[in-house]
Image (cartoon, rainbow, N blue to C red; front, side, top):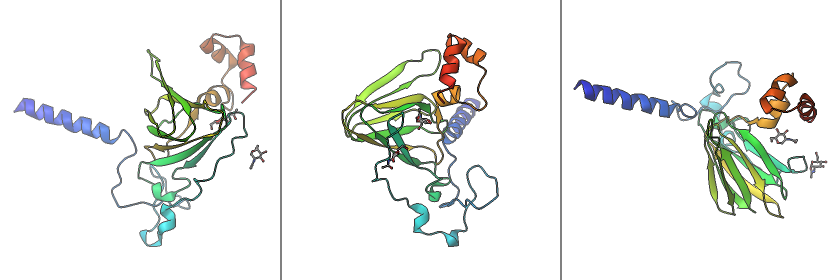
Length: 216
Ligand SMILES: *[C@@H]1O[C@H](CO)[C@@H](O)[C@H](O)[C@H]1NC(C)=O
Ligand SMILES: *[C@@H]1O[C@H](CO)[C@@H](O)[C@H](O)[C@H]1NC(C)=O
């Protein structure tokens, strides 16, 4: 009996952890974000249900290509709770990503979401790196229609390996996945991380670090 109770508690505990692996589950039909509210909650405060309409659950424009004229040669068009208030508390969001030929979506991580991506046009090399100590690179070239998943928190990237534009649509398991672009966070923080620290971390001369910091 005691054994069964311990087993049951373990199962209950692991379910509790699973439930918190992404955004918490909603306790009501919806909670359309009210950006005007000053209430501080984990997410955004809810609009009065009576003042909610279809437009709160809708976003238009993902058929439009993003402008890829930038050093990355890519553009992410997000549809998170900031663009679609009805996503508040639902634990889900999506993005369209446009890539110029050889454009990249540079190495980055989403602290709060797993991402599942599908190629709509063109071909992409994608990859992610496992955590320490292995730091294994898992990489693959995807064609139109292929799907790939980037596990929550891991550093990942995409590159257009075609001579034409590429387009991907991705879904993320958070209303507000967050993005940490590695180069910008490490070399572009404000104020900058001391170049002594980065020189030691990357095992290069301080001048190399300063050159990188000047780019962000
Ligand atoms: C795309 O972005 C570039 C750089 O910001 C800008 O010069 C250009 O006008 C933009 N193109 C369009 C079609 O908006
Ligand atoms: C590349 O894209 C990332 C994420 O979209 C952005 O944070 C970064 O500023 C861009 N880098 C350059 C050099 O434009």
